[in-house]
Image (cartoon, rainbow, N blue to C red; front, side, top):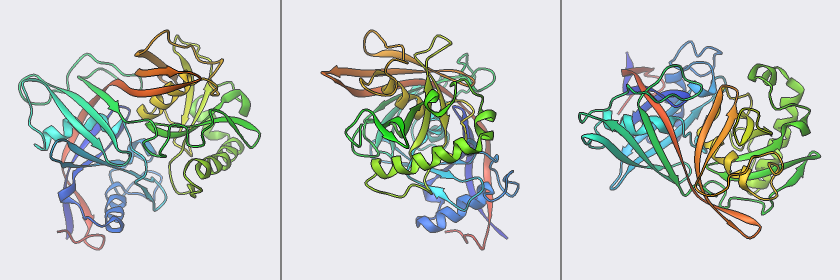
Length: 360
């Protein structure tokens, strides 16, 4: 016998994962972690004994519950190989599927035409509004919206984010500096939607146009970046050891070459992201407009705010509508908006061994 847990399986943006109701899962964190690792098959390169896909973008979990005025979205990043589950970050690609999933689960009522779903991203405290297409009072996934990194088109999901500056570290610039040195390399340590260590690709011996495969094969580079990331984490998070955490993430930036505002390679953090994280694009957009950051002199600056920013990544462009105000020598980030897509891939029950969890 095994324990059956109801779930939805959705692609959200350029990630995919399992979406659960909080009521269907154990409440204590240790048991929850064991359940999620078992459900996704963590511990094997192919996640052969679960529903994961062998990469960090396919071993993600959204846990939903209905609040008084919004949907609570609790995110879990399951490590494909290691027996670790990280609850510190959020994932705004997976968040693209939260609105549709909440409607499918009947946690939020659908309207005719389109439905606005207010979402509280529990991990970071961000407040998000998702606009989901519901032409007949039900979620539709068919549409003409294309996003780079996903084949074909689908119905748009519009996301508007507020409260993203300093949401994890308590300040947009956790160290109070727009630029500082780690291992002789200039970096910007920035917390906008996602804590990140951002460096110029050229300062690490790269062009900035490397493929994900080239970055992943550069073992000495990855080892150096990880050592830098650990120091960045200590500085950003009050001396914390981030060796087992996926934050801060890494951005390697260069001048745009395809009509965008900035070109970037995003690390998740121990491997290159195949495209670009939504939260990463928001943080990189903020870096682009921040005076004195490592993006100064590389980024193409917008003339006014709100600005339609374009972050170039290995599979194309990711647009971010950035709302900001320049104040003296700095910048204040008010919010960011983005268009993504999502698709329901499967629904049913996922089985976990009784020895992992016997159920409610």
